[in-house]
Image (tube, rainbow over all chains, first blue to last red; front, side, top):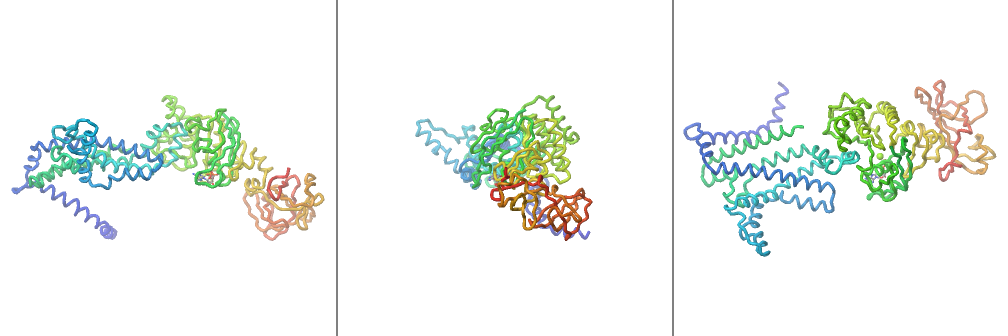
Length: 273
Length: 356
Ligand SMILES: Nc1ncnc2c1ncn2[C@@H]1O[C@H](COP(=O)(O)OP(=O)(O)O)[C@@H](O)[C@H]1O
Ligand SMILES: [Mg+2]
């Protein structure tokens, strides 16, 4: 008993923090989503499910994750492996690749909007070359709209994965590379049998982070497409501010939370050594 | 099987200001066990890594089995290696670690299994095949590193201080075992160590290195008994060889008022100073009333169990003397020492090189 009190005192700040910043908003959120003026209700959840935008947003979010994340990981790993070969001006390359990390997602969305919009840089270049221009972001062209969101997100968020992979690579001693090459490994065999397996913990962290962040993707798509390419978090925004219905907004937010938890737990189990 | 020939290898690291290996030439015969030994920083690892293909020489060539491999990457040189840090892969089980080279060569599964199991058996690892390296002791990891190196049946085996991370007892045990295993395989072996005892006990020949050069190369006992220069005598052996300066005078070596007989071959050095060397175990103590030999006083007596190591002072300075365990002496005792002419080696006091 005498041991418990100081222990409690020591962890009290973090308990208070967790309670104030996580538990309490969670409870408040659940209450808001399932509690109407006449007591417990599922009306907000039903309202959410009846909205076609919700299902489209869910589909788009899933599609974005499935297409974006493998691309990002492939790119980040290739970039990190290139850096490991200590190219000339490695510091400069690193700096350039990491810059998007410092740019807010809305700003990134606006930058790409100025490229893809009807009178944007891309069309100016096409026009200059005598190629007919194209309405990349028009709702009539969902493929190019999606492509634009993917490209913008790729540029904006790959650097996060890149930094994590670089940090992970620094923990793989060169001895292992040398041992592998003495025992006859080609470069690809070294990557496959030695480097990637040892990157597993870093990749796991990056995967969880990126998936959760992708579930929350919003500002880039909003800037580029408005509501033509709805995403889950965009819908909460829509319900909260445009439709003035915080209850449905919270219900959607809870869906995002649930998906995040499922993804994190899933990765942890899937990638267990 | 294949011999290794190294010709005029020169290497200066970009950040270094002197040569790490300075024009080294070396011939390792097919099936020979050659030990490179020398103090830390003398270029042993650099030489080994150039043979392995992990470091590019500035000049010179490396030939393995008659094939010039100087420009080939490590993986095409057909050799295997035991690293000082072991470098066994933490994410692979012992079995996959031992079989790593075979996996890279895409050896078919049945043969893969037999060869991994044979290597594991040779190193007493059969019970540990399904563990991860983190679940092994230092000595066992060491064995995995050796097993991985021998599983590939390479023509040439390179080892860089493979025993230096083991504690003293394990090192002694494993040294003997390693000698047995390598002798059985008959692989050409290039072995690096800074431990002179290890070098003496393992090598068919030892090459003593100093400052990026090979000071002397030969059979262990030859190098031990007849050091080609003062440095070698002072490096090999525990205790190292004793050295003292003497003047040659009419068939004797004179040190102060003491003198010992000198061999006739020193006639040309009459009335000049030379450096004489003698091993501690070649000095005999004559107690009692005898008049031959030189006078000395005991400073320290250290029983080592099988022998007694004495530190004595005489006209020529300090001497280490090794004697049988039966002797009873205490600090301050006066002794007479005999320095047999046949056991004395003579060096040029300026260059430290042996007198022909
Ligand atoms: N990667 C390196 N960069 C610069 N200098 C090095 C490097 N490796 C070794 N050296 C230098 O080269 C010399 C020989 O080193 P090394 O071959 O490792 O010696 P040993 O293995 O005999 O202890 C030393 O002076 C050492 O400081
Ligand atoms: Mg070394």
